[in-house]
Structures are given as structure tokens and as C-alpha cells.
Length: 86
Image 1 (cartoon, rainbow, N blue to C red):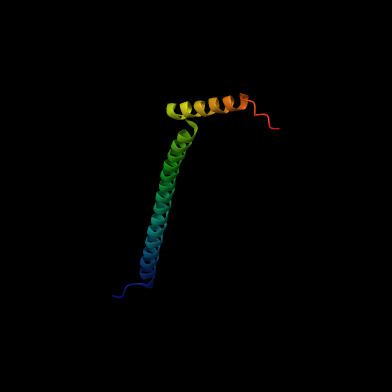
Image 2: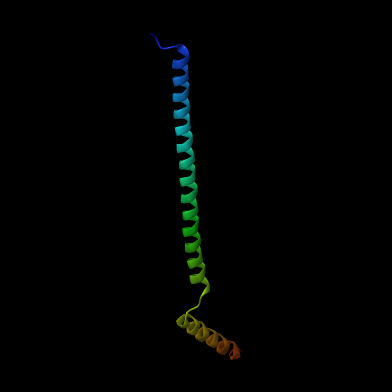
């Protein structure tokens, strides 16, 4: 007894649906993984940028003392009168 054409067509259609559904599921999974990865990278970049900004805006004690010495010398040199030239 031969297999009816309708049964063959039905099985072929279901196979195509299954393959298409698998491809769609894999595509959705890849997209979700991509989004998660990008969010992770963005978090790392934000943390790194925060660290850089903190390092640039904070002044340590040695740097402040050096700057104070330079400013004191600049004030002293600004207070002296230049020699009189004939």
C-alpha cells in the first residue's frame, strides 16, 4: 500500500516548520546573547571611565604641596621690583 501524497506533504511541511522554528529560536538566542554581551561591555566601560575620571579629578597630598610651593614662589617673584636700568 503506497503512502498517500497528502501524508508525504504533511510530513514535509512539518519538517520545514521544525527547521524554520529551530532557526528562529537560534536567531533569537544569538540576539539575546549579543544584547547581554553588549550590556556587560557597557558596564565595564562605564566602570573604567569612572575610574579614569576619579583619577583625573582627585588631587593627592604630594601634588597639592608641590603646587602650593610653586604658587608661593610665583607670588614672591611677582612681589619683587625689577632693577632700575639706566
